Amino acid sequence: RGSQSCTAAMSKIQTEYLKSCVEAIFDGAKDRKRKFTETVELQVGLKNYDPQKDKRFAGQVKLNHVARPTMRICVLGDAYHCERAEQEGVDFKTADGLKAFNKNKKLIKKFAKQYHAFLASESMIKQIPRLLGPGLNKAGKFPTLITQAEPLSGKMDELKSTVKFQLKKVLCMCVAVGHVNMEHGECVDNLKLAINFLVSLLKKNWQNVKSLHIKTTMGKPQRIY
Image 1 (cartoon, rainbow, N blue to C red):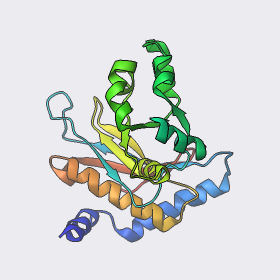
Image 2: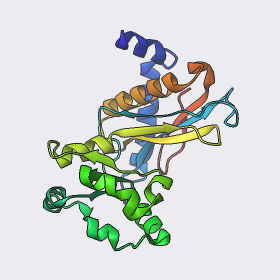
Image 3: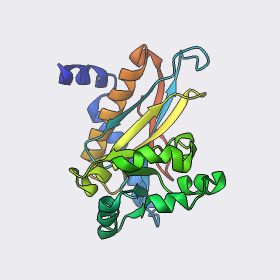
Image 4: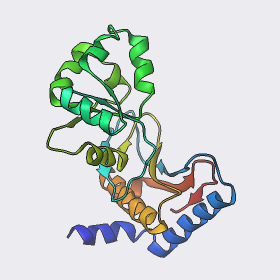
């Protein structure tokens, strides 16, 4: 049944057309090589929504392929996870490291800005509100739990493959669904999954979608719907 609903949702955008749009933005990125890896973004315009009255939605979905390979992640760990992070060359902070912020809001805000996301050991997650106050929560970066049973690299890839849709005060949003060094087919795959998930969050599904564009970080937007 899942694949049927997936096909139904995507029938609004023909796969061949989506492939040609992805090829166009990838070709554009090739023509002007940047010194960094450009991200592929999905830009969403909504309609028939009133952010003041309608229930604001939020949801996240794990894509099949890593969307943001250069995502900066910091581990807030117990002794075990800090050791793992050090071995894998990942930034980490111990409980003492967090205590050193002394609940200074400016320092915590600056710390939160340095990273796209955080992972935390179970023992640390419970301490974060006490050590840091609401800083990470306010920044929308409350840590994801990591257990000792999960390999750190796998958990990090999961974060790098996850996209979050959240309706705030405006009727547009933008999420990263890939990068210019991935295969075209992988990008199409990620786009389909992200779009289907977004449509499932909307109260009237496709009737709430005004427009969908894709673009690379520095490229021109390409309308796909």
